[in-house]
Figure 1 (cartoon, rainbow, N blue to C red):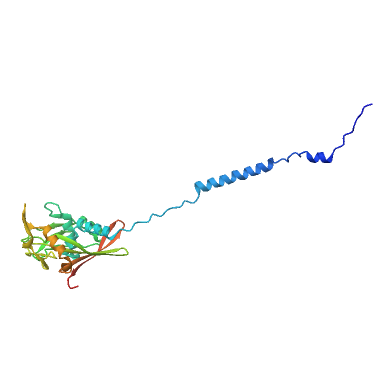
Figure 2 (figure 1 turned 180 degrees about the horizontal axis):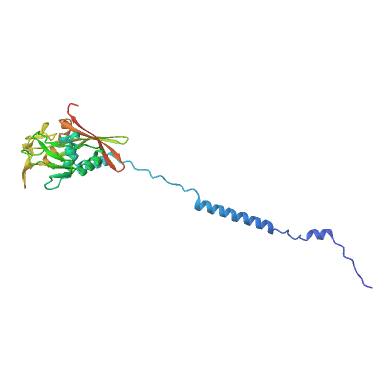
Length: 268
């Protein structure tokens, strides 16, 4: 006789047995997809997101820097000649510039004069004959057919001194895009005066030229070192004596345009 004991499940023991985990594959797949999508979005934002453009701030020049630029501009374009010829004589100023350093400068292109006046003054002019400053006839004849000025010949007198022997900044002011530079200048023209003056005509006297002469390889001439020392030492007293010269510039891009020029007399 077989002893067969029938198995009966014990509920307490069944509770002790760990139930097999549910299938999480679907959940893992969903999470993986979400993570991949998030990484993809982050990469897109990193490589093609809105770029921050840093605006370059232009450094504003100091007045000392502007002063140096304007003094160079005046020198390069020979604008001291305005002291002799004025704004009404800017064609003569242009001829002086174009003939500087040119040997036997007898003919000057009208196109070159127009270019100079446009670049420096932003003006257009009508050409005609140019009379001598001492009213002894025509100095340059304008040839309208060939658009050029032709020197008529040597006159019986020396030309005007159009370059000062000394120059000093009286003041500089800046307002918006306009800069006004005022200069004191000293001229010496032995054909016109025995004095060093504040104008090319030899009118407003400052020093007796004989007190500042010395010998050079080319003969007797002004000792500029001695003259400048005397002027600087007495500048507070002399700066409002005679005439001063005012230039008002406008900066267009990297270039300057001379918009206004004025001779300031001592009484003003």
